[in-house]
Structures are given as C-alpha cells and as structure tokens.
Image 1 (cartoon, rainbow, N blue to C red):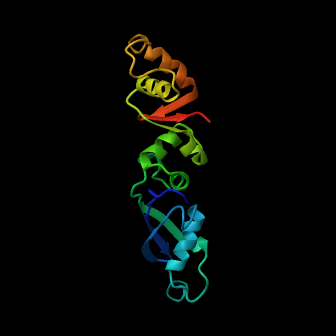
Image 2 (cartoon, rainbow, N blue to C red):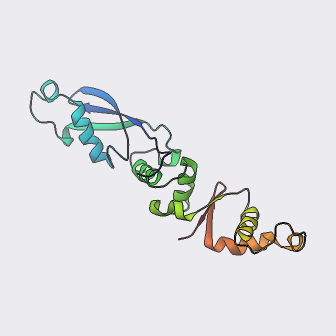
Image 3 (spheres, rainbow, N blue to C red):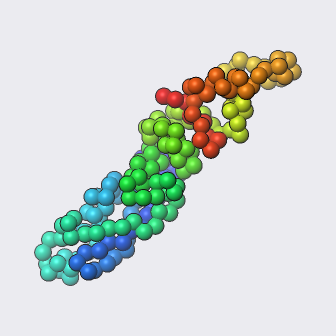
Length: 171
C-alpha cells in the first residue's frame, strides 16, 4: 500500500447459527473479497458457543457489509468495494480522484501516472497543458488572445478522459 490518504474501515454484520456479531475491517489490508471477509468472521465467533465445539466453516457464515464509510456510492456494494479499496490503496490520490479514474476506465495501477489534474473545463485544461509543455508564453498578450482554446481542447481530449473535472491521460 502506498497511499498515505488511505483510511478505509467498513462495518459488517456476521451471522452464524443464530449468533450475530458486528465487526470492522479494512477491505484492502484485512481481506480482498467476500470469501476473505467470511474467514475474518469465523475468527469473530467462538466455535464452542456457536457450533458445539466443531469447526466453523465459511458455509456456516452469512456476512453483510452494513456501513460503507468513505466509499463512493457507485462502489458501496459487496461486489465493487474491493476494486475501489485496491485502487485507493495503490495510488497517492484522494478518494474523489480515484472514483473519477475508475469511472474513466483507468487501471488502478495507472492512476498516479495518468492523473493530469483538476480543471473547470476542457479549455482550461488545454491551456494549462500548452503552458506546461512550453508551447505558449503566458506573459504574452498575443497570440494568447487569438488561440481557439475550444478547438485546442477538442483535439487534446482524444488522448485524455475527464470525469467531474478530473483529467486523466489515456494509457
């Protein structure tokens, strides 16, 4: 894990033969799928109290994630939460950037490399990119007031994706 912003702790309810327990877990460091979550739940139950001393298996456990704290709504389900947690843990970006990257189809391992910043419009993004690569002199009045930033942005966006103002290079 490399993201210093990473802090996900979810709550789940586990049921085993009529006994119920709540516990928290990290969907990246503690387990990476629902089967792993069931294994965590097994450790929460005392086999002597629940299963007459016999081993508890994953088939004996029902788990439901009850609190998706800090998980964006699109990933707040038992299928997608693992993908989001992996992407968030593996990059150095905030939650909003990770959500936008996944929406744009950026692979979790490429988020840091693909992320190009947050802008109010494609035109603002195009102007910033032109400035970054030294294509224009920011202090010059001309040709800055003559450049069709809408057209420049249209051409630039062939190589980039955007969601909620977050821009990513297509890798």
